[in-house]
Image 1 (cartoon, each protein chain N blue to C red):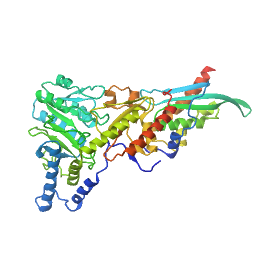
Image 2 (image 1 turned 135 degrees about the vertical axis):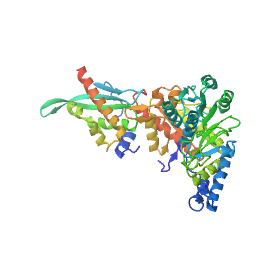
Image 3 (image 1 turned 90 degrees about the vertical axis):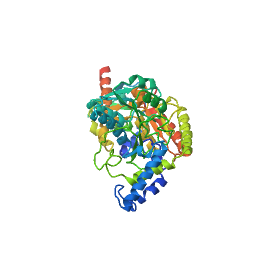
Length: 130
Length: 386
């Protein structure tokens, strides 16, 4: 399968890979018996945006069981989400991730959607916990 | 990283041997005749065709007239099973039962599934943890309606070599036919149709450093099958179509140049690979240690995904193959690995390494060094590997 240079880079040297000790939330998606597994760890901080205090993603890390595309999309979504407000991070789409990776093969687009699901789930878990 | 590709996917296909290429060359431009033509250039082609048939027949202890040239393994398996079933249908013998196993190549399994639509009854037998079929299970499955038992000789994924003689004896004793798909095993382990009591055997060329698009089906004298391709009546009316002489000549040359020394060399490198891989923590061998194809290694790496391993190895310049293909939203685990009892997770963490007579010890050492790095890296990324 032909992957873009960006996918290969993010696969060979993934960014934000690992765990966060005492995270504010974790989003776990997937099932190892039938596909990929992604875990996203969040540390939430606060920042003034237009005079208002907003919650932002201060730190984000991932762990992934899956193919090259799954690992590259995990790496990419953490880079896209880092520093964003929770509201902005929630709006990251499957296409945003794929485009930032210079595209994904059609049969690998579900990897991108799994990454989006993992991030949204982590944010949702954070809100529930509050 | 070296620019040179290390090709460890020889169970998929192999590079053509220089001697094979040389043998084929004149049959494209100088000796381009049609073996059915009566003139000199046609007779020359016919002579090459029959000489090739003799070489292949001799290699499996068959008679030349028992060899039918085909386009390869898939056609051979289709012709054997559909040909036998359709013959029994046409001749109204009342027989409609085929016995096979759960670890066959897709060209057998999907042929059987298609035949079920035509009224065939198929028994798909289980295998043990190493992929061996129990001949007693075959004996128990045989009924008065059984046409043929079809068992793969050397398994393409896990390398298990079946004891054909035992299976052949069961089939002869119970008066049913015995077909074997020997595409992976041909020239790599003994194949003797008389000793092993084989009635039909599928062979091909591109797994043994011959050209793609050519193979053969051995059909024991006296066995009747219905052809799939009707036409000018080539190959004893069983496979019409002008014979692919350059490829057939190349196939025969590939058989001729294969040698027992190569098997020994591959076995040594295979064992070095297996031992090296098993030194990595949490690695298990799929398939047997003994009675294994000389060029096959298949292992599962716990908690990391096979396709990712393959992709990362490619970054190191190494070509391998995974037992699973990631399709849409699910990883479809290999039917062979499932049949030997692996969980979907174990099956999806597998890698097949298949070497050839050209593989060097240096390549094996480089592979073992690279795979340790890959596994370490991917386990650090995996949430399952804590």
